[in-house]
Image (tube, rainbow, N blue to C red; front, side, top):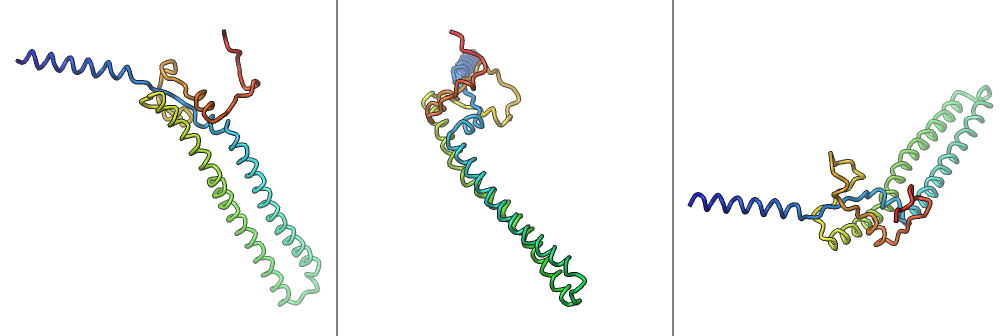
Amino acid sequence: MKKAVKLTLAIALLMGSTSLFAQKFGRINTQEIIMAMPETKTMQENMETYAKELQDNIETMQVEFNTKYQEYQKNLNTLSDMAKEMKEKELQDLQNRIQEFQGRAQQEYQKKQNELLTPIIDKAKNAIDKIAAAGSYLAVFDTSTGSLAYFDETTLTDLAPAVKKELGITDAPAATTTPAAN
């Protein structure tokens, strides 16, 4: 009886370990996929335009401050104490508004970037999920995060070509580092 239980356990362990080796694992560099998507280039162009708008507003405010400060400096000797105090308060208030606007601009820039990037990430993730499910992969490791301590690259299938095809991304010929061997 003991021999039969041991034999059954040994067979179960052997079958379990061989089925583990039959599983498919893949790897992908999600960052590379996202950067290759045409939507990312459009997003970057939109973000550059938005950053320029914000910078132009800051510069306009800074010019206003500089103009008022130069006027204050020019008339400093002719202003009464109360007028000096009012001009200094006006300059301080304007400087505070500029600093507040800069802080809000940074927050708004980050918010807009996240707003534009989220659908791109979702689209890439959906394509990865579709390719992984169609290929019956047990797991797909994202090599862009650097979260893997070790993996044998030759035993993992790179899903990037299939995901790029799914997303309609074609690599530019200049992007290849070595010619393909036939």
